[in-house]
Length: 112
Length: 116
Image (cartoon, rainbow over the protein chains, first blue to last red):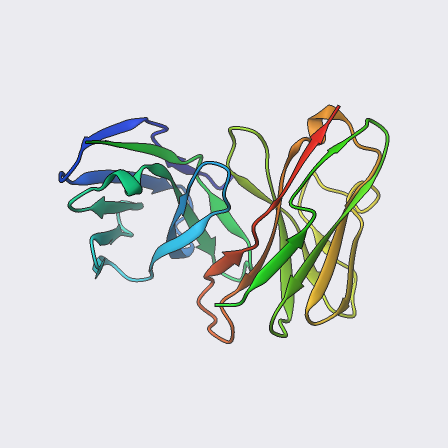
């Protein structure tokens, strides 16, 4: 059973601070990793993708991947109230067209 | 990214009835994917819809319960048949970023079904 694990939260973060979200996955054959943001009542929105070990930065977001330890993380710098949402980690396995294995999501609450 | 439109956006249905959800994409795509998100849960892939062939269903999902049509490269439907309250979920249509091979999926707005 391929699994993707996330802390459900809520993760409470003061405005302006860094939010750190973690995700672990069970299958070493995983090849692609994604972070989605989902506002309440809305569909998931892709915010980051990462494919190789190391860091990838996009604006206030940084994704970090460590395939040896089988974890992927997301950092949100200078957190804003608009960042309050559920963040879903998703993993794509080799030859699994369109099939992403999603974690349960971490709820982030940014407090002013 | 492709523009993905779903209809209906929400509906309240009676037990035992069926509902068909439509998904329209503004570009031609080879594969379209149907996901389900049950209340408080994450997303689970129901099936992959390819134009001109039978849909491929994931474990736990069957064609009799979730028949899928894919008449052309921009459109698909998912029917939720003989609904029960356990089918109350958000149903999401998705496609991969065009010609990228990246695995990045984009989702429609979703269809929120409540079964009474």
